[in-house]
Image (cartoon, rainbow, N blue to C red):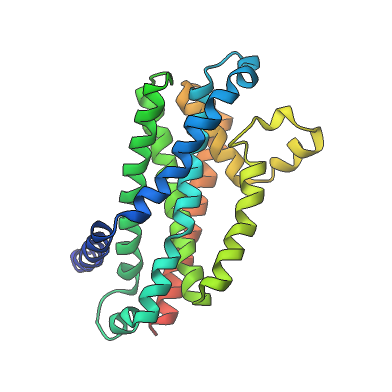
Length: 251
């Protein structure tokens, strides 16, 4: 275990130094949810007001999940660049654990997501979001786990296809139904009944509901159970897939 942690730390430190030298991706990844919060949030007041809740307390959790999903999905692009530059090939000749090669990169992605999430929550509080420390903490933890799942899956897919031209349209194809059917932007109950029913089959919707419930201090067992269960399951499956791809690539 000590060897695995040391190897993971080495990979993590290298990845972190790369981000610090070029922080553009961190800033760019943060801009979209912030712009949604500043420009789209005020438009929600008459809509979300029908539910009798604060629009920013309702909207910020959705933006957190969006940040965790869409920001992490692009993690694989940097891995393709490393593969093209021969970094992955160089790592193949080392005795480092193949799991450490993934977890070190994943640690970088989770730290980046944590910083972005704290900024987004802080901005939400400034704009009038209700303060619920325990709920916010749980919501951020769920978001980070979901982001870790997306980052691990992105790395695995990137190392499988090794092409930005393939990866970009696939991500866009996945993002559209997730954004529209997960209730990130608007309550699904406001739509047609068939659309609301279809959204129940979208795992991300249950995660959004759990994070949103946590922010409101509503820890309903069913909502939390589905949200936490899907988050843990997606994280476990994605890490397993990512580790398997790294092992196969480095076999």
